[in-house]
Length: 428
Ligand SMILES: *[C@@H]1O[C@H](CO)[C@@H](O)[C@H](O)[C@H]1NC(C)=O
Ligand SMILES: *[C@@H]1O[C@H](CO)[C@@H](O)[C@H](O)[C@H]1NC(C)=O
Ligand SMILES: *[C@@H]1O[C@H](CO)[C@@H](O)[C@H](O)[C@H]1NC(C)=O
Ligand SMILES: *[C@@H]1O[C@H](CO)[C@@H](O)[C@H](O)[C@H]1NC(C)=O
Ligand SMILES: *[C@@H]1O[C@H](CO)[C@@H](O)[C@H](O)[C@H]1NC(C)=O
Image (cartoon, rainbow, N blue to C red; front, top):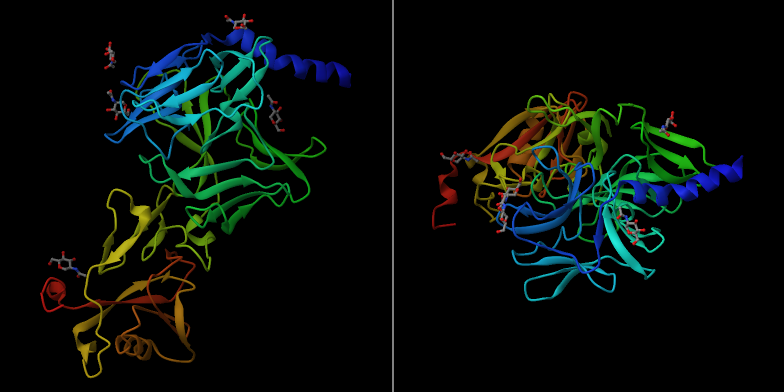
């Protein structure tokens, strides 16, 4: 019984490739030209090739090719877009390389085994390099970017890295890691390095987990060393027959499973069937890093349960096209010169249920709200006062871990300059 099963498992990749692939032969190449430069899977569901990213260049990617928005599920050069005239080639000696127009190598598939005789875009969304016996030598499923697909399995040490924004595919500061100790974590990192700042969700499978499985029925779970299911992450089974599915560590740090109906009668969109964590705004409270949103902003869970990053009064987005990057101060700071007496030029704006934990430099107990307001107003180092249950905290910049939520209580007192015209005056 056991040997019959392993024989079946052993044969599976062979038959999959033989039955459902259109081979890409050695010496084939694709130019970065326009969006119609790709190799499609036999069903046409997936394509491997170039997609133009705005005016910034081309991404060598895999995407859902039958849906209008061509959702990208994998990419080779996310941090290094290439210009038109670049090309990806399956060389005559069996290497898969991406070269820029000058012939410089931008990316290549890292092979441990030689003898590649062909490549294939499979109907699962996996792009593979295989040898004469159709044994897979390299597969895109082994080097994921931010997305996993049904039938994909991640081994210990695998990582998904979020992108910067909805439209910027370059690496961001959130990661989904199946650690070598067996624990699956969602974490923030000391961007651009890989070191972990803070794990804001974990499967609690230390010494137990061995793989993350996204199976054909749409389940996502941690599989134990003994083969058992040790932690169901998503039990939201939606048929893969009728729906396209993907799970992605989104740019906002939330890991979401999406489905999209395959029978397209009217314009459709991806809908979320499951996600973790439930409220990322409240989940990240870390001494290093900005929190769920960027510095000087705060996170609010929207009506659709997605986090929204907003700026407090007196601050505006660093990049209005990427609100997760944080906010900048719009006014000239209070002078710390002796005798400047500037506190009359400033006002404290109230924001209920708002806090920026861990940016404190003073903490007063058994004081009144007015006392707190005055204490911050007269201190040139204080940018925000937090008043809650007779406690008063003074905050410095940059503010981090910002959130607004009914469970926070109390209020934030935001210091801003009353007349902000002075921010343009040459005197400053
Ligand atoms: C390719 O597709 C992207 C996204 O769908 C679009 O922004 C871009 O303009 C398209 N480029 C061409 C040449 O059609
Ligand atoms: C892409 O470029 C090729 C070659 O110039 C051209 O034949 C094709 O029509 C273009 N497709 C699109 C969608 O622009
Ligand atoms: C793909 O190439 C392999 C090895 O050359 C061959 O065995 C297989 O039949 C080819 N498959 C198709 C669909 O052409
Ligand atoms: C997927 O996993 C779930 C939970 O273990 C299981 O009930 C289901 O049968 C699996 N589906 C497939 C196709 O293996
Ligand atoms: C400063 O003034 C401009 C124009 O009057 C206004 O739009 C902006 O919100 C003000 N900024 C602050 C910090 O009040």
